[in-house]
Length: 225
Image (cartoon, rainbow, N blue to C red; front, side, top):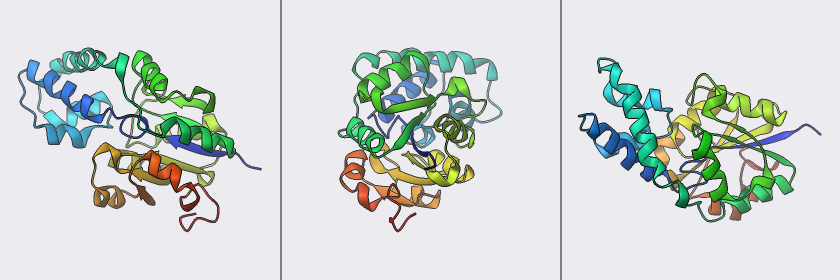
């Protein structure tokens, strides 16, 4: 039987951390002399740091500030790492999929101590077969590279995979990699935006997905398969 991959974003999908990132980025920009509206930052969450700064400050910015802004965000967000919250059902969902024979791989822009803290919050390491972090790829989402690396780690083909995320960048990355996608609304992005970006199915959060797993793209007889 061919390997099947369940690929998961982390921030906003498995962990309730998107708005912590928004506040940390807002303050990092403020310290560098930039006033960036929080709704704009929220819509950019899920991009890697370089792409997020490019999107919010534009190509004509003082690029010499980029490193300091990114470092400030990391330091500010780091004040939360000992208490990052996982969404209800996050670990249970990963264990349930692993128990059904899916190879669970994380595809995330987090890395290092931040990623370790997120994994501690989810508390399902026994179900996770691998991680494609920002340290492992040249381009983050919406590039398909993180999803393709996750498939490689799982030993699965695109047609035997499902990607779960909460942002339009997640949905676009999955579509470019030829992978079916499930969106969750827990990251705060509207359903219509996620569907427009390519989501095959939308659930309220991971607890809702777990409760309705047999109605999702994770079953062969699913209408989404």
